Image (cartoon, rainbow, N blue to C red; front, top):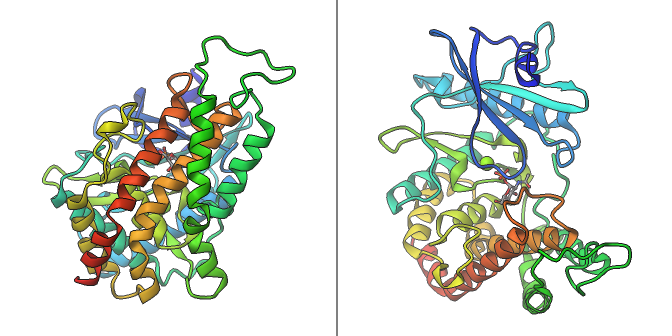
Length: 376
Ligand code: GN1
Ligand code: MG
């Protein structure tokens, strides 16, 4: 029996396994589709990256609390087809847990939702629906009785992300800043981006204080933390064949955060006219049609609980997220690619450069964003 089939056999799934194949494009966990024989459902098997999510028990507790709360709300409102609208996790045999540790690796299984689609890009119509869905997701979780833990502490804390970047620069662990580092062999295949990195660091430094506004507002008691999704990349949403939103997936980062997280991270991916790792920065810009559609949908469903401070700062969120992602990708590049999966040697550098280009394009649209939101 292969490792994967042996893991699967420990969970209380229905049916016999026919095949196991890789699924999706996430940068953190390993994901597989488990196809079963006959009429039993198919499943999604995930290896949870516990180098990043250090407390898997807390993480699964969060996810069970969130999916349980949403499921109860959907049932109470008489929704049909609930198993397509919220994820369902499978328990380990003879256990109350929905996660398994085996040889230091952590696993979980959820039911695969058939005839559902994910997209890497969206049109304004889908963007509007996504706005409604993420606003709705936050609204449904506003009264969750459980206290959720921070699965990655200070995940979207911009001050912390900047200090991690500074630390990376100081350590220069693999010589990507000054081209050589004591004791570390310089890899001749690794293109030298030293000078561009220095320019990027200066650019980041120019906006650092402004981009940490959320932390300041929080300290001043002007900005609440709410249960947010915190990874609202466009591809973390399932659509049916007619373009209706089924549900939000990838729930590892559901935790208390600022609403800026969900608003900003969706636009970072959806309003970018190019992929997040586009090497040609001339192709990258911030698409205002996607912004407007998403903002309209989001405020329709989240407007009932958003404060004025939250609403007024949504344009800031749209800028802050590409900025934060640039900082994270750049820090990982300098650290020698220890966090994100990469496909080529300077992939994290290319990603950081692309995110900075998107950040600047978003900045150019701030006034227009403000006006639009004020007029809603
Ligand atoms: C990661 O797991 P995935 O690929 O959906 C990351 C996000 C980043 C994103 C960048 C736990 O998301 O925060 O925005 O990559 N998740 C974690 O593409 O760090
Ligand atoms: Mg994902």
